[in-house]
Length: 596
Image (cartoon, rainbow, N blue to C red):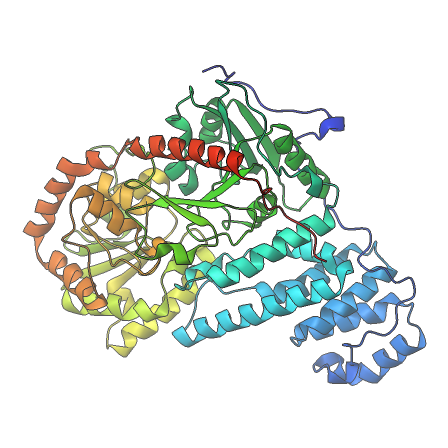
């Protein structure tokens, strides 16, 4: 293959070292230009309610009398933040920081004010609460973008806000997010190019000169090069790469290192690692970006933009003449620096191209080469060890709790009502703090139907990988979540022989399990409506023979979805055609640019 399996890219400091130790806390030196700030227009202390309201005359007097004193601005910023007056709070904090830029604790207040406009809950009490949160986010994003564009000195804080918060939970609301993602993505690119003007010219505008027989350089960027769902679905693109056609460059921005990381490093001709730590460090971030640009990639693939903030900070730049994203996080990136979205023809609905700011590329089948999970024939656990009874019909509902929206609660209630001795098993993962509000909401739905939540539902703690596989073996039916389907979990359920019930959604992220069942040729448990979903779940719960027959069918057909590489070959052919197409174009590639 021509690559050293032990090679790890380490560049000397003068070339921009990819740092392997934890980064220290960083704060920008200045956030405001003005050496003598005037009282801010949005900071009317008399408008600020709360415990400090009685002192509004005092704060007004302090600001007007001594505009060079930082403390009153900071105090007022916190007061306004707590009362929801975000624009005024940001202005106050920035005035304070302009005067005393070394007061590190004040940056937290300023960032908290920014964050107030982008924060979304993980669990919604009602459907109305979901729509209100979505409206608040859209309005807040508008205001935040407008504020940073009208006050360029705020761009440093905008960068920190991007590093702090990604619109992750927005994508779990079950809606088409293209417009909001495009708005956010354009803001990210503009912020990066403004804050890092020395990096912007490094972005490639045209393909590199290649000699005859020169392999394509493909760069895979991810913050999850470890045992994670992103690597389960997409590491096969590296494992099964045609090394006569491609050189593989991998860029890992994250914190964990495990056996999967080692494998990715062995599969790469070059592997760059930036340990991001807990706080954003601009110098090391810039060094990581410079290392990637020095490699002169032909194609850059962002595996998981949207999973966390660091991938927006990376994807907001152009690293290759052809830049792609894919469904490690199955939502359009909205980034103008990304040309193509690599998806699956089984998973996409009709007119799917309207859901993406990128040009949609549908690879054949599932589009991935998924290794069959090494599940032992018989589980070592038994139901009693999990608090489950042997005579119960166990429905495994194992998605992250934030995938379960309140409008679907009635389905779980109807299933529990119709199936004697039924037990819905949820998992308190990956964020256990989501379990209490989720349980409270679902308990209310059960109570409204005259049922006790505890009699029909169990929320298990997070399970190890092996325990999770055994839980699939012990369950009777896998119930897919609505609007955001399970992919890895559905594939692992199939590997364990567990029948899957699913309802395809309107967007790709709601159609994973349906695509997997279609690829298997087992479509009888794909519902067409919510009522059909309930009927299928109830029918399987009440019919042991049907469940057993499905298990046999799954065992006979499962080879159709595991270790399949035709999607990888199609991907590589696309890379070649996309690079050739870019070489023939006369116009330069779009890049991240500062606003005018």
